[in-house]
Length: 413
Image (cartoon, rainbow, N blue to C red; front, side, top):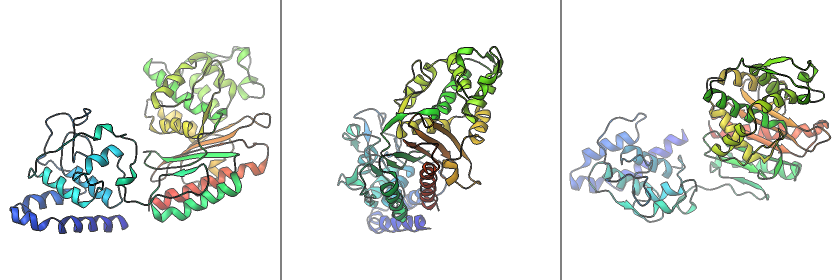
């Protein structure tokens, strides 16, 4: 409802600043058609202007082509109005392109100018500055939203929805009073439009959270090389990790890749993971890390080191996986037998993927990673130097999960 009202207000501003001039030029009918399309739920075929050169060529951007598709039309006008109504995030590069009158503001006046271009009333305008901007950076001088302002060192967010500021402050207070320097986390929606972070660049050993990203990279490799899930691998004595289920089988026992994946993900079995690692090697994960922009790398050892924010890239990658083995992988991630850390803070009717990691009392590092399937799915990675053998060290996982879920649900009412 709030979004609808904001959009209507933006339309009123647009019309109040432009109707007179449109009537004087005898073009109200054309612009009314474009205004109608800007606010329509579905996009239809319309007359559009296409710049003479590709808009994505450095130095060849054009004002008003906000979505960089090579056309100036009602879609671009809609993006400008949504940004003006605080319903849409634009990158720095998009803001420069949307600032048609170059006054360091993006508002309904720019939408009016974009409409005139789309209706072929005004000519297109080259933009010689857009190629200098960072497409991923948000530029505050264009942004009319209020950013949440943290008081706690290491606590960061780019959320601008003031309706959840009280919930973000509650989470920040929890970090201040309970986490200190022993726990970190990174939260982001799966489209990476917004995030909340607490010391999420601090590096730890991944522990067993790496097993899910490794399996995902392995499945990509299997599909590329036509390796079936029922391929058999044989247990070797040097692959056995003490205390793990698969280690109890005789040397030479045959396991399918599907079975080993099951044990590695659901039971966090190191022996099963070692068998997969010995067959596929470290490079399947290293190549995938490079592809998604992660710093995580493996050598001869099956565990690596990275941070919560870096591991979030891998769980976003897992969310987006849609390969031929998705059903098997998804089932293992949902029905993991590991201790329910983040799961404790998420109602049972919400599906989550997750993978726990811990070195036990002998090794510092107690982590949990999850993809949470709300209406606006998100990734939550919690890395800590807590101890799984102490019961009270489980509570931060539950509390962080509860508080980030409350923020997510409130933002998407």
